Structures are given as structure tokens and as C-alpha cells.
Amino acid sequence: MSRHLLMRLRAPLVSFGGETIDSNGVIRDFPALSMVTGLIANALGYDRGDFASHDRLQARIVMGTRLDDGGTRLVDFQTAQLGKRDEAWTTRREPETRQGDSYEGPHLRHREYHADLDALIAMRLEPADEKPTLDDIAAALDRPKRPLFIGRKPCLPMTRVFIDIIDADDILDALQQTAAPDLPEFRVQLPEGEGTPRQSRWQDVCDERNWKTGVHGGWRRVLEGSGPTRVTPAANSSNLAERSV
Image (cartoon, rainbow, N blue to C red; front, side, top):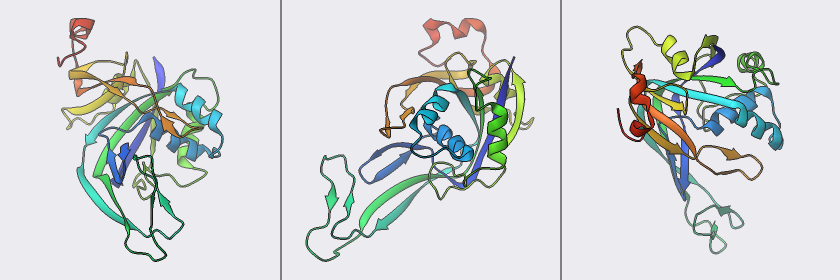
């Protein structure tokens, strides 16, 4: 068994950010590895420019998520005034700017959020004895160096983020152990090799960040499904891995 840290992500508004396309900021169903890395790094007080520490922390995290309440999605329509010298980022290879000397209209943005989402993260660090340890992270989450937010800065947690440190065989075991008796089934996302929930399927997610460039790259394989019942070992074979079981 290995030690696993449990984190509760619960807030009126939660942003599990996905790929932003021009003015549309979309969200994922599950938190990105980079988002959890950033949240923990913020609690530990890492400097924004300490890229090596961020990269190393991200590389050590093995995490999975259980959605106790997926919440509802909403879209926030935002406007921002751009002055003559201000520019807005786009995917057209040309920044959006204001023409002329006067302010003619706002820069328009659409930002998605989860409303009233309740998620539990189970994570461990590999290697476990390298600094920061799970105990260091637990202490930092209770007494963070800076305010914590879940995705975007308006998304402030409404409950204690650190829950507990438990012993479990793998990530799925940690998420199953802590499921409420009145929660017969839940959605989960697990890294490869960390258990197999029922009705599962493989997904490739791009959620690892290069902290120096600020760009996400590469693909990480995860398994999404429902719990808490495990499938039989035969259903975890490679010939069934690519379809629902």
C-alpha cells in the first residue's frame, strides 16, 4: 500500500480549464494535472518563475478524480476595455487591437464554469520521500502561502481543500474507500495502471504544462468510467482497453 493525499475541490464556481480558442474559454469535466500542480505550488509559495520546481512537482504527481457532484455548466459573458496600445491574444497569429485613437467597443470573451461542482482528488508522489512530501503539501494546503483558487482566480474553495492522508493500493482504491454509502455510483478519471472502474474507456488528455513556456504539450493516457465496483481482471486485458466494458 502507498500513502495517498485527498483533496476536496468544491466551490460555487469551478474552472477545469481546457483548450482556449480565441475568446472562448472552455472547461473539462475533470481537473488537469497542470491545474492541480499550480494549486499545490501556490500553496507552497513557489515563485512564478521557478520553472524547474513546477516541472518536477508535476512529474511526481500521480492523481485521479472522483466527481461526487458534476454540477451544472454556465457561460460567463465578459467584456474588457482595450486602449489604443492594448492587444488581445488570438489564434489567428495576429493580436487583436483597437483601430484609431478612440475606444469604440469592448473586447468580448466567453468563459465556461462548473457551478456547484464537488470533486475529490486522490494523489501520491513518486518518489514519496523527495521534498515536498505529502505531509508538506497537507500543511501548505491548510496554511497556504497565497490564496488558493480552483482554476481561475474567481473560483475560491468553499471548504477545506486538504481532507486526509490514507493508505490505499492504488488511486481507485483511495477514491472507493472514501465514497459515501449513499453514493452508489460516481464518475472517475484515473491514470493508467491505477485500477479499472466499470463502464470505462481510455482517453488521451493534453494536460501537462511546460512551465517555462506556459504551453501544454504531449498526451497523457487516462481511464474514465464509473465506480465503485471494479471489473474482473479479464475485463482489464488489452483487447478490451479501447472500448467500454
